[in-house]
Image 1 (cartoon, rainbow, N blue to C red):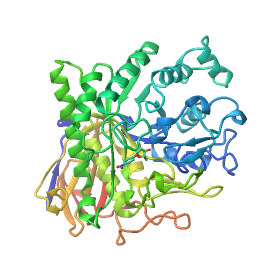
Image 2 (image 1 turned 135 degrees about the horizontal axis):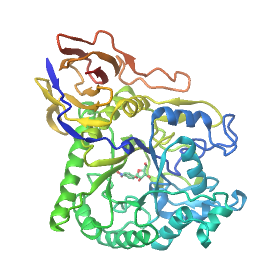
Image 3 (image 1 turned 180 degrees about the horizontal axis):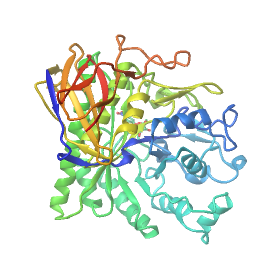
Length: 495
Ligand SMILES: O=[N+]([O-])c1ccc(O[C@@H]2O[C@@H](CO)[C@H](O)[C@H]2O)cc1
């Protein structure tokens, strides 16, 4: 028997809704035949697929990072604005596909308004630089009356795009990045780019690049060097992480939330170290702007891809276990809601996405869509601590002995509603859970399956979906629920 205690008095912090962000890169079929397909029967006059837009709204995504990813590090935004028939076809060096530039800055802003999401823009600090970044910023955000903003007006957008969040490059520590840099080189460029961008608009929110993943040899030290230069100039530092089972070790994979948790704690510590060195009152926050399950072992590497037209790339098909892990990673982000203010599920459509499409055909929800949509819908506004006692532990090769239960909770003072998000990370054991609470169960939804490798397909799009759990009720001030092995849960309670 495990016991989970929550109390509205023990607060982690207010939830920043931008934690439910996602990511659209010019990569594979994320843009073309994903969000944009003028020939599709559901396309609107802008060429945006309405079937995909509806799923994006249902997913509850609040913010979307664009246009990359590795793509951005050799992307010249001017290729993607103006009359479409005059835009160049260019070789994208990141993914070695021909980029037709039929979708660019103005199209993404128009799409984000329709999707009701906040755009997050990454600038090219690989082959671009300060000039490219400030020119794009002026094109987007200045009122009419300058050469750059008047170009936007001429291209059909009289009102400024008013993009508030800007990423200073992408994964600049990665040798795979076009224009990859040492920490010192990047720190100087980020510093000067931030300085110049703030001359255009002092109030922007800027995200400086952290490490590409926690296994990078410079993890931690990269952040220290970069932040020592940029601490005063930026608001957030980025984290990226992708998870997959290694050598068939599903037990460690189910506990991947442990790895994300430790990574966040390390970067918080590093940021606070620089804060101490600088005797600075400002507290830096984190932007976990790429995270997901990604079966990287199936990716042949960029040089394994022939030069080609845009086509399918890393279209992972997600299982029940993958969805449980995505749910547990969301729990980790919520547990750190005091410091993580932005997070982006990478990516949104087709490319390791919660939404899949057929060119010219159907669109459907992958398994990982469900924990994301339910968390986005029911979490907030205040994140609470959860104290778990008496639950089982599991042995993992990757993280040692860890608790099987992984949980967070949120509270809505206005309605008195409590949302508990909990995962049973054990592969083998069910857990009987008790939650002392004075109210009633509003709903208990869960994601699990006898067949943990089950997936959704175009022909069977609802094979994996949340199920309502009967029998979870409050008796004598205690809510009792049973959590099957490898399962994700939302238990909503009135108080
Ligand atoms: O671990 N790696 O070797 C590794 C390599 C590339 C990599 O790229 C990131 O993931 C890509 C797909 O979302 C984005 O374009 C990029 O930012 C992320 C991780």
